[in-house]
Length: 405
Image (cartoon, rainbow, N blue to C red):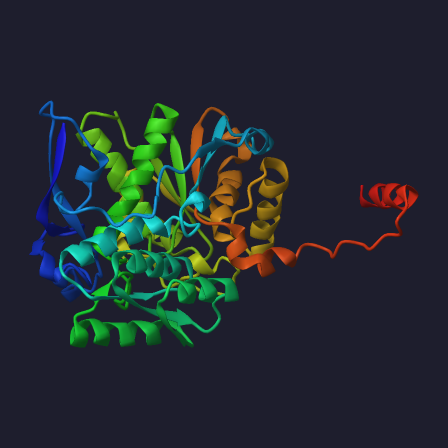
């Protein structure tokens, strides 16, 4: 079994082929038809008896060391108590908070930065609300590259601190489109390598980095010993969703799995739900609002997300307002000992919705928990009271415990 990157990219929609110089910004042919579509690296796959390495499935030169901080290999944890409460046969959490910068973005950043370094870049640039910027800043530091981060003024303080402490040049803007406009100009004028989306409407992030998420699929299948029935992923521009689909598709093509699991997008606003219902190739825009799930707070989705959902026979689930998300964050922490960011519990809220009427009682479900709750402690604090200050007696403690229950 072997898989080899061919050094070119292919359009997800029209199958047009492009050289690496056209990797960023999406397919020009589809854009001319009014449909923004990402490109993906193309591979040759053969069942030839050769040993297979995960690195072969990534668009990286084999003669250069990786840019790694020890990402990946995160645990697939059984959520027995929560799964039982929700009525799910087997519920697992792929806990991506264990990565070096405490989010799944490290998988994208490792591959995207390594590719940029191999191609001789000196500067990478990223537009981000938090996790993406922290990851790229850390991996750029490890690779010796300059990193420019364009973030939102509203980004949580912990996120801004992480981006800056890794040495990135961080600048804030009032809105997303403003950042993208500046980023497009910087990529064009300076030749900086984009790590994130900068197209408007969006197509997705650096396509080489998106393939870094394939390793989540590889690890789930390895650790579970089989392919689960469902994999639930938080989605906005759907880099993770698209990459995970490609990983399972690779396993099928290599003969290491019989099928791709049903992929489910957990979303807060509903562009994928609308597009799938309408049979549309454009995901959104739909009405939006302020939300603590800021990592996926987009009223629009991407074609790459729709493509992954359709090819896997999947669907999208709208999770509702922040009250449901914050309640699930507290529930999974109190029942399973796991503190995820608000976006990280979106798959669990989606799983609860899908489990209604016993629909998941006989199924194995893997939810991708994207990051730690420590990135935005203020969101959690909204539901918690300050600890009471007690007199130093056991009687006072006993009374307080009785009142608490």
